[in-house]
Image (cartoon, rainbow, N blue to C red):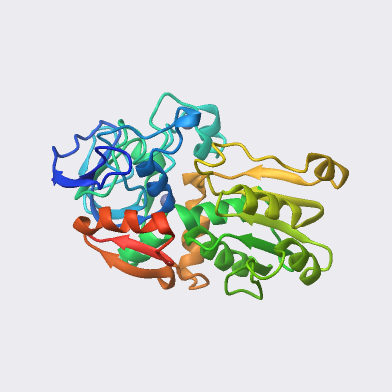
Length: 342
Ligand SMILES: [Zn+2]
Ligand SMILES: [Zn+2]
């Protein structure tokens, strides 16, 4: 099959012929119909994560937001059949550890690959075929009438935004949520917040209220608009300034949710106003992907037309164009969500 392979951090991905994936007894092989291109791919490509011993090694096929059709099924798989349409979560789970068994497969600690497209034992989906391990637990079954680009746009961003605002922060109707960072996950968070009935103030985005972060102090502006601070604030970007701004945007007893991973400047560490957070009982929450077992909630939202991830898709590109589109992210030259269709 053809795939886009990481040869050296920061050098264009090598689109080339590689061996087809082999199917585990508990896995399936999926023919990729579409795969979102995400800032997490860019971080991997740049070699970020070295500070946490988490850099993606050379030889990796990136791509972690695929949807496609099952073309091969392992002997032990019970619920997935050849021809089924599925989405693959990037957060892979073993299905049997304590976290998986209690509905938190997104933080699985089992002896198993944990991140599709980020580790050698889980090669990604900038390719014609991709393997999904523990398919009974991980596969998200899709209705026939959903377009693959919509699902790819749903990608890690929609799932992450939904899990972050609903399950992690407990955002409720009528509450204020602030969204910092205008990439795919930020835009997804706005749609999810709208569905949950929350009021949205976004920095540099279309929302109920918009703050121009370059022209005014976003924290002051958000505090003014929300009568004392948001109930929940989300940093979708992961730079020190947006993280701290997000924390400082919440009201007493509010919650900040960190979704964006940091860059080389922060190396995974951001200093925070901890005395102020303690004084006001402000929570700092991490959020990663979504437990695969919660996918039905998200799919019913999709079926209701309440959210429209396809509206975030600004460009579809071929496998051959993926290296160039990743490079465009270096200068924040991309808008909305771009999707690879091989
Ligand atoms: Zn597990
Ligand atoms: Zn992603």
